[in-house]
Each structure stands twice: as structure tokens, then as C-alpha cells.
Amino acid sequence: MRDSQSIANRVIAYVDGFNLYFGLKESGWRRYYWLDIHALVANILPPGSSLLDVKYFTARVDAPEGKRVRQNTYLEALQAATACKTVFGKYQPELTHCSHCGGETRIPKEKMTDVNIAVEMMADAFDDRFDTAMLVSGDSDLTPPVRHIRHRFPGKRVVVAFPPKRHSIELERASSGSFVIARSRLRDSQLPDAIAKPDGYILRRPERWR
View (cartoon, rainbow, N blue to C red):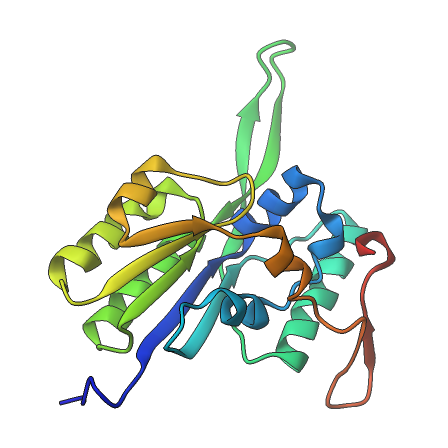
């Protein structure tokens, strides 16, 4: 059994990459896209916490080409410079009907992120890997796993860190506590402009993100 007096509050963070990205985009904060996810979580941890893991959930985009290249550069930078673990979902084309012209088109939709987050949170709770789960998201679809973890494990906490422009009353009520990530935390959690990969290749912050 753990000695609760000698071991700090164990925290695992679960970061909803697209929810965070679109919150930054809607805020007009492109300059913060080059975000060190691990540093951000460390900067918003409560005092007396021990950060055990940071899991970043996203999916690779296929187009347009410029966006694909920028995302790949960013994901490689996270891997090279941080201890963040990336969990991938996928994009799946969905048939959409135009109400004006009657035409049909396939639009890629991001899938699996909320399911992946729920599965990882539940598995870590059952394996007793954390005392506090920090969820970085404003997606109300994540309310059921948050509520279930708190019901099944009364001694564990689930704290929600809302990205800018992202909020859910349901998620807030289901959580042990919540707050909005401050702009200053985003500003102070940026990756270096240039990052060297193990093979010596230099990854650079995209010009559009400056």
C-alpha cells in the first residue's frame, strides 16, 4: 500500500489536442500553436503534485499540404523535445449533403479522440496510476468517463483545465474542480524555435505560427 504521507499527489494529464487547437484558433492565438504540452501541464499543476505522465490525443491531417507539413513538424518537435506521449485517432470522410444545390461531398471528420481519452483515463484509474487526472478539454462528450471515475473511485479527483474559448457546464459539474487555462501559461509554455532531432535534423517553428 502506498504511504500517502510520503508520496505526492500523482497526476496524469490527458490533453484533447483538437479541442485545445481550435480554442487557440478561435482566440486568434496562432503564436501559441508551438506549444510545449508537457511544460503547459507542469505550469498549471497544483502545488504538491507529481506529474507522472502527459498523454496528448490527436489525429494526423492529410490536407491541405501546408497544414499537414506544419502538424508533422510540430508532432516531431513534441517527440524530440518533451516526454509527452501521443495517442492517435484518425480522420474519416463523412458524406455531407448541400441543402442548396443538392450535391454531395465527403468532408474529413476527426474520430476516436474522445473514445481514446475515455479508455486511457478509465484504464489508468483501474490500475491506480493516478490520484488526480487532469483533463485538458471542453468536450462535453467526456462527461460520462469523468463522472464514472469519480463515482467508482471516490478517492480520486478529475480536474478539468478548459482551453480558451472552450467550456462545458456538464463537464464542469461532473469534475472535482475546473479552471480556464490563462494566456500567460500558454505564452510561458512554448517550445524552443529550433529543436534538434536525434539524427541532427533541425525542426523549426513554422513562420505562420510566429
